[in-house]
Length: 386
Image (cartoon, rainbow, N blue to C red):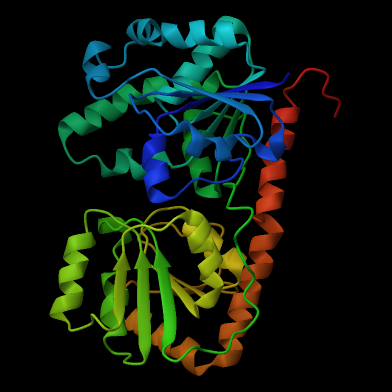
C-alpha cells in the first residue's frame, strides 16, 4: 500500500467553485493507493468532487486551520510556537504512515511538511507555484508588510532547506531559491488537464473572429487594453473567462464603450469545459505582469492557439520567445496591431499556432508532466532503483 500525505493552504471548495479540478492532480499516474489531504484552513469541500484529483486512490481529508491569527499566536512565526500549532499534523502522519509528504507552497505548508520529515523521517517534496521575492516581497508596500516578509523568510528558508526536494513549477522561481541558498531543486511544470484539451487543426478564421482570454481579473492581469483594442476591430468578438476584483469595473468599461455585442465577460467555467472549447477560438490574448508561465497560457499553447501576450514590466519570462508567442507592449495599440496582423496574415497565424503546439507538447504535454511527477515520487519510494 503506497500512501501520500498532501499538505495545502488552498481551499478545495474554491477550486471546485472555479471548476479547477484536474484529474489525478494529487495522485499522478495513479501511483498511490491512499491519499490524505491536509488543508491548512477550515474548508469543508465535497469529498466526492475532490475524488477526481486523486484518481483511484482512497481519499481522506482533514484540517489544521491556520488563518491570519496564527501570525499573532505564533508571535511572528516563532518556530517553537509553530511547532505547537503543527503538532496535530505530526500525529496525523504517525497514524496515516505516508510514504511521502507532498507540500504545495513556500511557507506554512512547506513548514508542516519539513517538520513531519524531521520528526518521522518521511521524505518531503515541496512545490513552489510563485516566486515569493517577485510576487510577495517586492510588492510589500508598507513598513509592516516588509517586516512580516522578513519574519516569513526565516520560516521559508528553514522549511525549504529541510525538504528532500523542491519543485519550482517554472524557471523564474529559481532566482528566489538561489538567493536563499536552496540547491536541492528541479523544475517540474504544472500538470495540466489530461483529458479535455483538443488540438486545433483548422486555422481558417470565424466570422466574426473569435478571441479568448482566461485568467483572474485584477490589476496585474487586467485585460482592459485588449478590450479597448477590440473597439477598433468591429468584426472581432472577445470572450474573457475569469472572475476577480476587476470584474465589475471591466463590465462597466464594456458598457461605456458600447461593446456589449462584442465582449463577453464570463466569471466561471469548469476547466474541463473550457479546455474542450479552446480549439474553437481563433486567437488567445492575455495581459499579465506575473513572472510566470500561467496554466491558462499553457492550455492555449497545448491547444495550438496563436497566443498574444505582453512584455511584462521587469525581467522577461524565460520560457517565452517570439517564435511561438506573439509578444506585444501592454497598450491598446500593441494588442490592436497584433490582433490585426494575425487576422490579415493567415500564414503567420497558423505558423504561430503550430509552433506553440509543438513547443508546448515538447515540454508541457499533460501526459509528460503527470509522468514526470509520478517518476519523481518513485525515486523516494522504498526499493527504488535508478
